[in-house]
Every structure is written in structure tokens, then in C-alpha cells.
Image 1 (cartoon, rainbow, N blue to C red):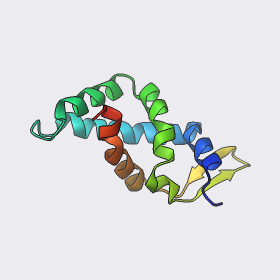
Image 2 (image 1 turned 90 degrees about the horizontal axis):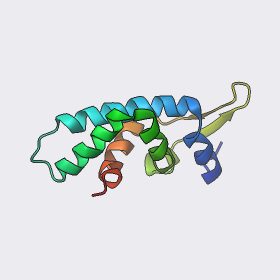
Image 3 (image 1 turned 45 degrees about the vertical axis):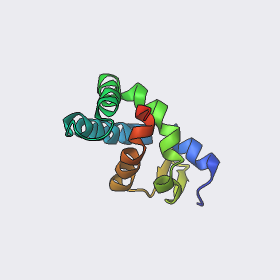
Image 4 (image 1 turned 90 degrees about the vertical axis):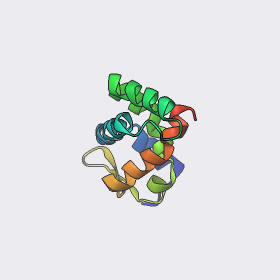
Length: 110
């Protein structure tokens, strides 16, 4: 199925995708917490990472629509599995994680 704004909206609110996304967001937050303090905007990036680690499900839900509508996920195929009642994406974990990293500063407010 071709990726559409409607399919990306459905993906962003799919519980299975949110579980997957939460794990990937937490993994990126752990990298940010451990990054070199000399990296530009480290304090802001780390502050946002701590908010992710303190409440991963809530923060990820807030990030999901933006991530689902970003380049790497729009470029992938999104499909509805009517039998399972889920939405799937052909984007692999590395592509999703790359998108999270690309958007991190925006989520951190820098």
C-alpha cells in the first residue's frame, strides 16, 4: 500500500508500532545521556533524554506522529493487516532509529 498521511497517522497510533518505537527511542536516549558533553546542545539533548528515560511510553506517544511522518518512514511502505488489526511499516529498526536521531534536537527544542 502506498504511504499516505492517513496510513502514517494510523501507524503513529498503532500499539505494536508504539512498543517498537518506545524501545528505539529509549535506546537513542541512552546514547544521548552518555554522549560527549562537548557536543553542541548537549545539555538540552541530555535533558530531553532524561525525560524519555523517566517516562518512555508517554514521551514516545508524543513523538510518534512526527516520526511516522518523517522522511525515513514516509519513504517506507505502510500497510494495514486487517486480520491482525495492526498497521505495519517496511522501515527497519536502523531506519527508524536514524530518524529518531535526526529529529532529536528538534524534540529537545534546539
